[in-house]
Length: 176
Image 1: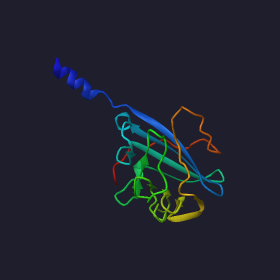
Image 2: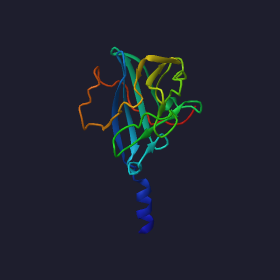
Image 3: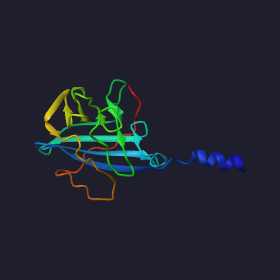
Image 4: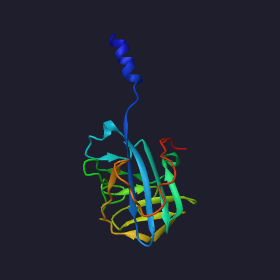
């Protein structure tokens, strides 16, 4: 009986929570995204990139898509740092891009390493900004301390100022 119970517990799929977010940059730039975090990670004070099981971002300039990135594109050379405060429902910002108070989503500290073609987001000690095709988009820059909220998927009508989020969340994290 114990063996059957143990085997059934192993076969039970882990549950996860889906989240959505929207970033408003300067000069008509914005980014929308989704992420999935296993429920057992949400009790931590800080969820990191190692805890995320799905992630997708799409960038826009004046409502025209300018690029996207998801975990299926993760390689050993990708700048990938994510910090999420599940209690405060925010991405911490204002610190170094590779620290717990910074973000590097396919864009490092200079936001010039997102690939060509490519898309990425960076929040570091200088600003929050985008990278498109290995180019730092300085026109997108906003204050590094700008609050970056996160919402449970389906809990709000997330109005990001344009067309609804395009694309799907990827859960493939294997580097190629």
